[in-house]
Image 1 (tube, rainbow, N blue to C red):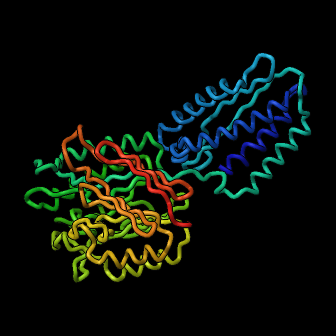
Image 2: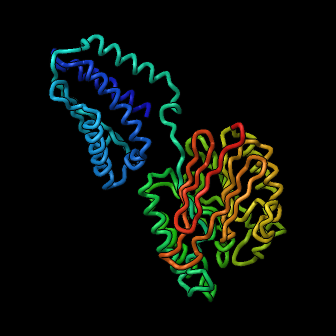
Image 3: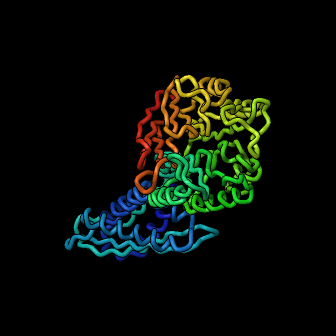
Length: 416
């Protein structure tokens, strides 16, 4: 956003030099300020994300929508009065590099002769405004709430329904979720484990086919897609095979536990899919009721929490809040080792979890533990479960649940 302000200001100065002597600089100046303010609003509406990705077919639609909104705003603000100036802005999509877009404004003006700002004052004010904007921290100009989508426990497989688990229908359910996520302009989405299931013969090739199909549905999201490993993800395949058939972005690619940052929030993704002897889950060699963090992962978590300063959100498939009274078998067996580190750090806002399909919530020492309801449960289209999570700059978290997923507000009680 700071780059936009630096880009617009010199261009408007240039336009002023080309303007006729009877131009109403007062109106033009305030119109520019309003336009820049609208660009900030435009960013808050999350339209910029689609444009910056530069995806085929999206630029024209995005710019067209922006121009339509700008026209509507201009009419409401009275920017086209008969007895004053009028300002017409058109936005053109032009590439300035790989995946980049160069917005260009064309400004025309016509005015009466009353209440004019002269050209010299206009340029001084505009240059001063650009200088002032350059002194502001980038975060103060571009910071908006972080918003991301969450799904968990899809258990997709081409096999018959078992109890309340409708394995085949998860593909339709997640497609609905991704369509909602794409309309909402999110920063990324994350699935919290048990992305797929297996067929009755426990055939690895068929299972990898299920994984490819459901991963393709997730990748319809126009942005980053992150994964958390669940126990069913290793039912008849290995962790390495699961990671090869899913696409975490950036440095998270091929990792079962990792961290990343988005809008000033650190996300720490954990993997508790290890046996009591700390050997990794793979090809069904485990008891799902016994999940552990290995010593090296606990040490990695300690380093991540010690070296970072920003607020953090932790994601894990199995539950960490064994203190909450939830069934012990759905919790990580050595969860307290990790929870102690989270609490000592003083910067963890929340833990997002799956695994326990009925959902759960608890809170201890300023950390919220939210367990999401499983998407697999109950019949589509009457039932589904997905959510959009919003993290405000102050650390307050709002969960907007869809279908069976309940909405919740989780206020930040830490001094982060």
